[in-house]
Length: 383
Image (spheres, rainbow, N blue to C red):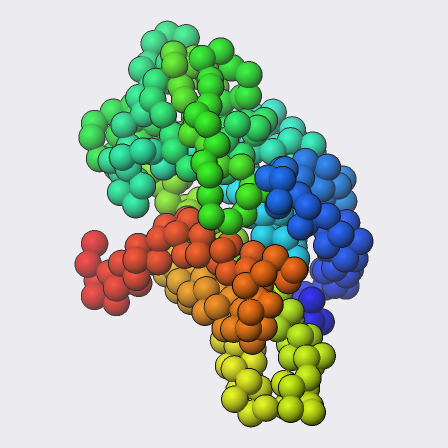
C-alpha cells in the first residue's frame, strides 16, 4: 500500500500502523488469493491479529482492549482492507459485536464478558437483519419470551457475518410491542442448545468472509444476558450501526487505495507506443481523480471518528462517510480495472476481486439509500 502521510495522535499509534503494514505484507498478502479462491475463513490470521491486540483496539485497557481512539482503530482497518477486505470486515464486525456490552452493559457484565471478547481468540457476530426486515430494522420478528429463568428465543437472523463460526452473538429480539420500542438486546454464547445455522450464502465477493443465517429454536439464556434495558435494544442497535458504518467506511477507503495502488503500479510498468501508459494524460487524469476521491473519503471518515472520540454526535457524519467512501470504492475499483484493460478482467491481477468486493460495501451496515435518508432527515429536521 502507498505510504499515506497520516496525522496520528501518538507514537504508539504510529507503531500500531507500522505493525499493521508489516503484518499485511508478511502474513496477509501471500495467502489472500488462495484463501479467497477456496472460501476459507482465515481463523489463523484472526488469531494472529488477536495476539497482537489488533482485534480490540477501541476498547478499555482494563478489560483487555487497546484503549486507542477510534481514528487510530479505523486507520488500522483501512490498512488491513487495502490488502484483504475479508479480514478488515471481520475485524470491523467483531468490534461491532463487542460494542453493546462495552457501551451498554452493566459493570458486572463488562467484567464478566469483555475480557473473553477482547482476549484475541474469540470472534463475535452481530445479529440484527432478518429475512423480511433488512433496512427496516424496527420490523424484526425474532421473539424472546420472558419467564422466571430468563428469555427463550425463537426466530431467524439473516446475512450474519461469522454466522456459523462465531463464539458469541449479540442478538436483537422482540420482547414487547411492535416497532422500535419493543426490541431488546441479548447475548448468546456459541453452543447454546437450540442454536443452529442456515447454509452459507454464495456471494459475489469476500468469499473468505462467511455469511449465514442464524436460527434460534427455543434458545434459552438467563436474565443476566440482557444488555441494557428490556425493550431498550433499538437504541443499542442504532448506536452500534453508527460505529459500524465508520468501520465499513474505513474498509472501503482501504479497498479503494489497494485498487489505486495496483492500477498505478501497472500503469508505470505497462508500455504502449514507446512509453509507460502512465504518461498518457487521459490515464494520468483517471489516476489523479481516483487519488483525490480517496483522500476526500478518508477525510470524511476521520472527521466522523474524531467527533466520536470527542464525545459529540457523529451519526450523520458517519452516514456521510459510509455513503461517500463506499461509492468511491465502487468507482475507483471500476476505473482501476479499466486501467488494466483486459488484464484487469482476469484473476492474474487483484482488480477483479476488488471490483466484486466493492459492491458489497454499498449494501452492508445500511444501504447507501438508507444513508441518504439519514442525511436528508437531518437536513430537513424530519424525525
